[in-house]
Image (cartoon, rainbow, N blue to C red; front, side, top):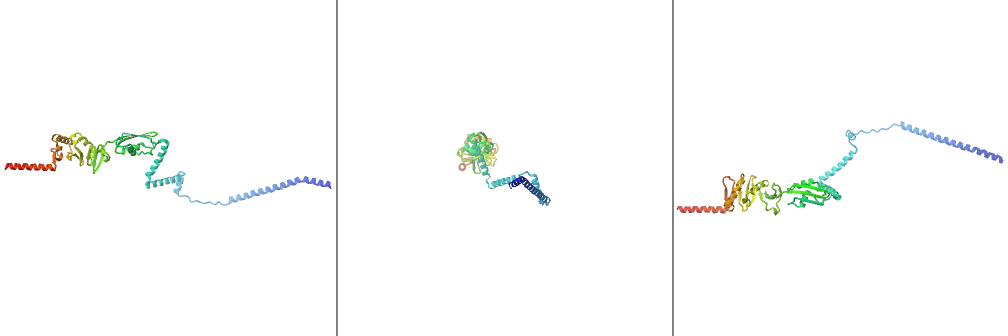
Length: 338
């Protein structure tokens, strides 16, 4: 028994590797069958997808104008147009709301502040040639303030603003970096006082109106009156100055009808000058006063408009006295005749 059992166990051990090999072969066949089945299933699915009819969605073509726009306009033009539209809307709102000047001032102040912080602040101002205007007035006329920076200051614009002022005949503006501003001006000289339509103004010799008369420092200037007297005063006053006998007692020169001049003397005497040969009339007037003290007589007007004679108008008192004198002479003659 023991020998037979040992033989049986030995035989079974010799058969176990063969059983394992058979099991492995069976497993491999099963796996191969499953793989073949999977591939067949994939082919069937692929075949169904190929044979399935395709659904085509037809889209309506865009309008011709839209097609042309999409074809020829550059990319992102829509974004650009939107941004421009927004900027234009903001600009229109600023203009319509009356805030344009405030907006420009704010932008200018912002850039000037940046330039000042970078070292371009105006720290020194030199102004030459001023006599009637103060430094603050000149800077205000030129538009230069404490917020201005030398970097963004437009020298030509400052010069144009200065020359637009009637007191300033010419101006030069220089920027000396980093912070010095130099201004050279040529001022007009006050020449005369001009009265027209009840308004009194200070004028230059070329007739430019400098300012309304408000300061007593111009009180010694000669006075001209009438329409057009502002532009004709220089030549006439130069002629009048040649005859100091008349010029020294003249209070005002009156331009009449934009054709000729009258003189109003300081004692109220009126002298009506001719339209032509004014120099000869002034020379004759000066000689009469020097020889006969004409201006000291009791007269109110001297008319020199006629070329061959001089007409003198007496005052009311002088005329009455002259009339009484003639009456007395007539009475005496009548008494002598009797």
